[in-house]
Length: 319
Image 1 (cartoon, one colour):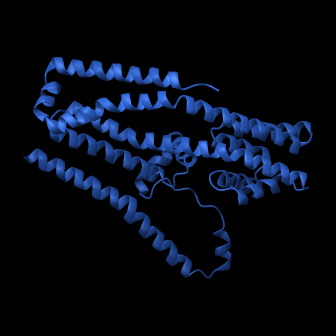
Image 2 (image 1 turned 90 degrees about the horizontal axis):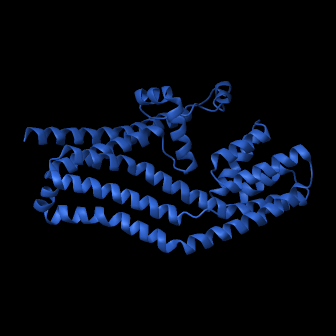
Image 3 (image 1 turned 135 degrees about the vertical axis):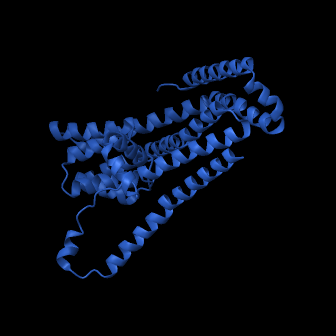
């Protein structure tokens, strides 16, 4: 009983602490900023406010300092969140991952009494935010690739009308919807505020994990070095992008059956395990407590992972 009470107090403290860190602290800081702006009078200090503030990785001072010390890890995680278009700090993402780990571990350990099964459930919960961010990133890149040929055509038409290349970038940023419009706006603002155009283009290609974006940057940089008609090059590039996107859609259509089969086969055993755990806990507990049952479960999980990887390799067609 004392152990259950301790687990309950720990989970409650984790939930309340996460709420305080994610909701209460940012709201109080936002109100402080608003009050400072309302009493703003000094024009000299106001001009200094135009300087870009250092990006905060977390609303909690201690966690922000720790994340700043882990520059490589925090930077990669920040880039992943930005490429997915998620407005979330690195600290919030880490707190969410930690909360899901402890929540899954405590709940499964409470119902089964097996620490190793709770640990596996906690690891699965901790991986969930990363998988969701990866899925959102893939959808965003797919949407960008769908809009990208139209953006390249728009820039080419602007250049044929006599506008400069940066003006074409601004027109694409103003005319297109997110995510392509937002990415072109960021590209235009970088070079407009002093960054060299080649550096801004390379940053654009690194930020977007798309082969079409790399083609676009390579074409523009090559034209700047060797000369030529950039509008004609962009027209041909847009035609190639549309053809690649058409082939990609055809491939996804033809491989839809295999992908759905892989999804069903991967999700069926965990779903059946949850159903058995809730409907017949005695029988399922025998499976996870008996040594032979544990070996059978380990073998089944390993074979399940191997099967999913094989099916994924079969339906992941290069084009």
